[in-house]
Image 1 (tube, helix red, strand yellow):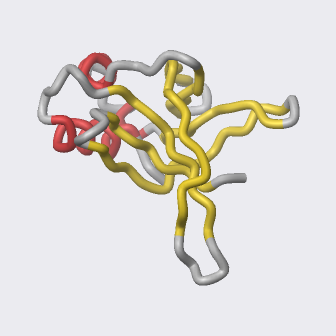
Image 2 (image 1 turned 45 degrees about the horizontal axis):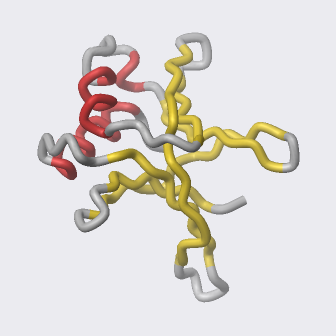
Amino acid sequence: MKVLIDLIEDIREAIQDDPAFTMNVMQLQETKEGQFTPVGESNVALYKVDDTQKKLFLFLGKTALNALQTFQKLNSLSNEAMMYEVKVSYSAAGQRIDQEIIGFGESLQDKKYLLFIQAA
């Protein structure tokens, strides 16, 4: 389980205040050998802090959030919110799926901050 403070610290280290980075999600499929291979990539288009569920939801869409601006806004949340679980939300077969993040990374060449989820 990844929490908001993990995400904030990793963004800070990964993008080094570069305003060109966008936020994206990479879906990974686990092979029989236990290796993960990419099967798809989507933009993180918006986020919602849910104080009732104590979660930060990242929603996929056509336009990608700016990683630096998102980091700055999330960094100003309360100390309690920093421990909220981070989920990636998308629709599949007409149903909302809230997927757990399994890792973070960046593509320096493409200027993308990546969140990794396991493909459903």
